[in-house]
Amino acid sequence: MSAPRKVEVTGESGYSIEIGPGLLADGARLGKPLRGRHALIVSDGNVAPLYLDGVVAALAEARPGLQLARFVIPPGEHEKTLERFTQCLHALSELGATRDATVIALGGGVVGDLAGFAAACWMRGIDCVQLPTTLLAMVDSSVGGKTAVDLPSGKNLVGAFHPPRAVVADTAALRSLPERELRAGLAEVVKYGAIFDAGFLDWLDSHADALLARDGDALAEAIARSCAFKADVVARDPFERGDRAMLNFGHTFGHAIETEQGYAGTSGDGLNHGEAVAVGMVLAARLSAALGRSSGADADRLQRLLERLGLPVRIPAGLEPQALLARMRLDKKADAAGLRFILWDRAGAARIVSGVPDEQVLAVLAAG
Image 1: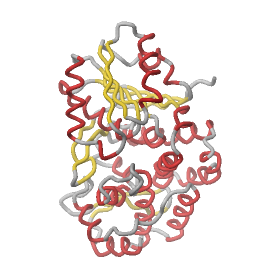
Image 2: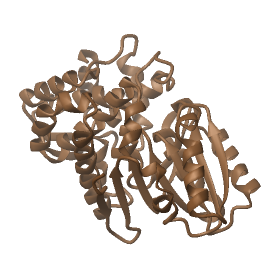
Image 3: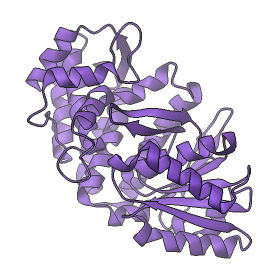
Image 4: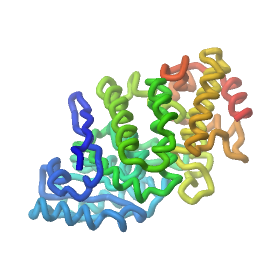
């Protein structure tokens, strides 16, 4: 077995991201970042039956004195709530978790966000180790320390910045990932090319078939390159006061779609996060062209790549432009000057733009 790829996140709260197959069975690797004698593993009803017992066994063998507890939630974005967050804190209390305890997030973005937020708040902050099992979590939500839960009025409105102590991404877990979730993760991979490197978009286009076929080398390369892009911007801007906001390309539109659909993506009645971001990126590219900032040809190219990866590129039927615009006004990226969007001058060159007129946004939504 080849050595795992490693990406370093530098800065005051630096940590390593390790990427490769079979890492969830490596108890020594999983136990290395744990400083204390207590660990709570948070997972969900889809992931726990596949991997939780194995992770517990690996850790128990590597760290015999470790006191382990489990907290398993039902799957789905609609479970990322203050109620589940409170239950997670109660699980830490029942474990007797001390200041040197660790919360281990075993799952996708919902689990990672919820577990990370609980770690940020328990005793004013304890360690969190991220064990992402979805492509989307491996390339995005597990890296960077943004943790949160949702409210009915908006996504990720309650949360904290809390960098993980380590990220361990076992690419073998992607073999059990449903096809739809794999494609959703590829949307976030595309995002990095869209905002940072047009050459990466070319690479994704030429490796699309291999990625969809779950070729291990292609997936590991895509994950490592995505994490390197994110690590670079997180090191420069850990609290999203500047350049890091560019990672939200497509998200202002995407979050509005998710919220308006009531986070129904898991049930199949709506778009999941990656799918909504795919639509949002196309809308952001179209808005850039409508404002004269970029070429429509770049938007067309982005749309073709997303379609090739099997992702939606249009707003679902039944969502009204005015309702989506209202959701955007409560988005975290809005400020006193009004709506802010991540737009691009061309593929691979994004920027933060404030003061976009409502009528332009509505026109793009109506055509979307």
